[in-house]
Image 1 (cartoon, rainbow, N blue to C red):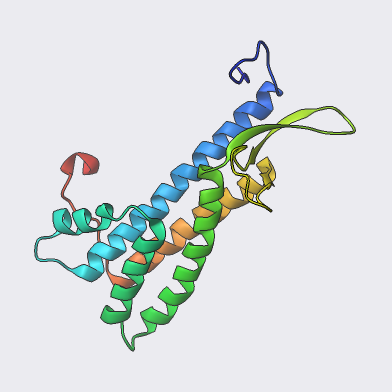
Image 2: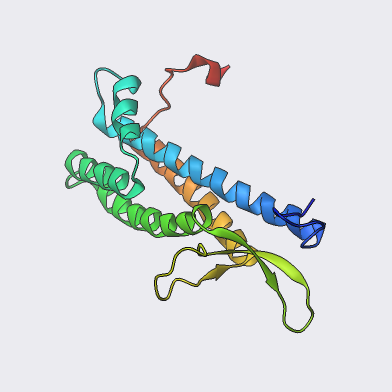
Length: 180
């Protein structure tokens, strides 16, 4: 089960392998909820007469997350100028921006096998690509760090959901099959 390419046997304990992969997948899935909530906020503040298809096309045509967040932030500044929601949004957008760095660490790192010096026990870590030769980029991320990020992603998703309710945003019903 815990095999990598070009190996003939398990590299790490199978239980560690399963836990690592669950946390990895769950973290990325939780981040999808963060991004879905940001889309709902964008759709709400744009309030297009064309409804969801147009706002969805605009939002999803921007691939870079920082650019998406900046677009939402600028729209929020216009729609909620001099309103208390803008202060709350400013704090929230700082958390989203900060958390996006951890999301990128998970999504863009390479799986690495780490061997404990004292025990010889092997475990998975995420690490910079072996092809990234920039100075200072040899970071490793442990299962414990990923669990912490996973919890923070879940908390952020809930905070965004609460904010959406506060500003009266709703889920567009342009895909009825998702709501049956």
